[in-house]
Length: 184
Image 1: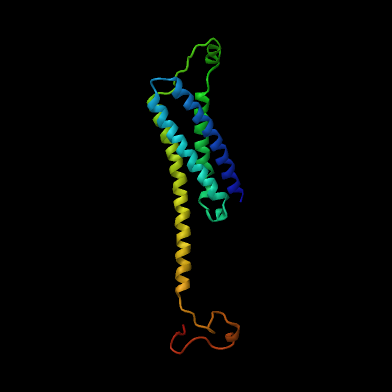
Image 2: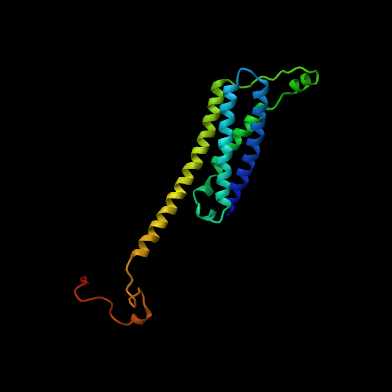
């Protein structure tokens, strides 16, 4: 249960942080001319990462969240994404020089990343999303195996009155002739 709460709190932080970074990116896309493609790709990845973490939160908090053992261990993947978003937010925050210049009516907003930096950030967020998806796939496989096991057990024929470890038969021999060999 503690792991689930840790994941949920991390997801909430990631959702809030990604919204802040997304709004900063939109501000840059309106004011910076030459980096619109990079900004759009970064915004798309942030939005996808945010949606993935929201869905993860919905699943973990849901009625069957306790069954998702692998997903409850995702704190490190979510924290990696969170730290990447925090670093991104710090780099996108307007500097004090820009704030002073904006008071005088000058726009001095410059996109702080090279194209390769944006690609690296997108790759980091994709890896975090991939780890989340992998854990959800593992949980899904475990649940499907349980369903298959239950289906198999439900298809077995029942022999009424011959249940294993029956109290009615505890003093009677339960082995049929020629079905057991004595050792030694």
